[in-house]
Image (cartoon, rainbow, N blue to C red):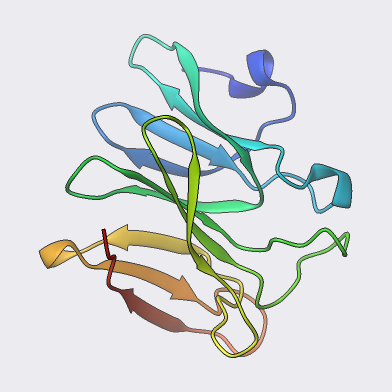
Length: 147
């Protein structure tokens, strides 16, 4: 057992992925000052914690593709509101050097509307649960990732 907040501060993990070791991240607080302050942590079986990605916001999804690349789903990304903002979700790939590559950045015509999870399925397709909370609810998006 490990207490993440004991070493990392106010971290209440909201997502976990198993990729040989555990990867966890945090929704964080809905506060404009909290934008880009969340991390993805790697937790080893012996309880060691290591930060593997920084500068994220409102993380509700973490997954790895067949090439061991890390993907992060942000449910709400806005510096203009203290609360959740509809249609501002983002899908980000974390490169080996830690750089973030935004793959989906919501627009009014093509939004991620409160996405709440992601997973890779058969054939390497990525699936995102969209409209995860608030009306309307319930949509699964199949996303083809281009390298």
